Length: 165
Image (cartoon, rainbow, N blue to C red):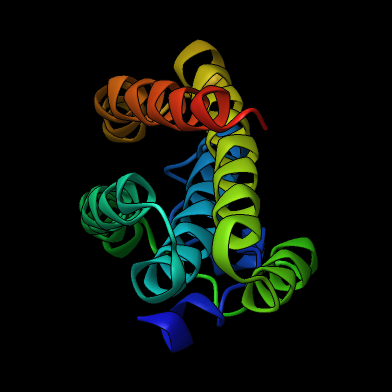
């Protein structure tokens, strides 16, 4: 899963057949794939390196959640001709590399703060999709994922607060 997570880039509009998706829909799917891959890559490392058992448990839960998102997004991508991105965006690659260099509580803090930011960005993308998206299937994915992301954000904030980060 880690290697797959490292291989994501943005989908180009030329990757779309049939024009069934608006730019907002494509942006949501593209960013969703990137955030899912980033979460999977970081979570895989967290399962082995996190100091706090709550961090490890959250990492496992988020990996399961991103699998569900990717399954739904893959169905839409197959129907509309979107190609799944193949390279993690540069800022995520840098953050992933930085995380690998951390250990102990520094690792936990970096993971939690990175995932909190990624989840908040995903929630913003979701809000844009819910407000301006045009494809009912993509809107439904966003609608179903919203409470999941909100719960993750609450969990990450609780860990952050409990540790004084």
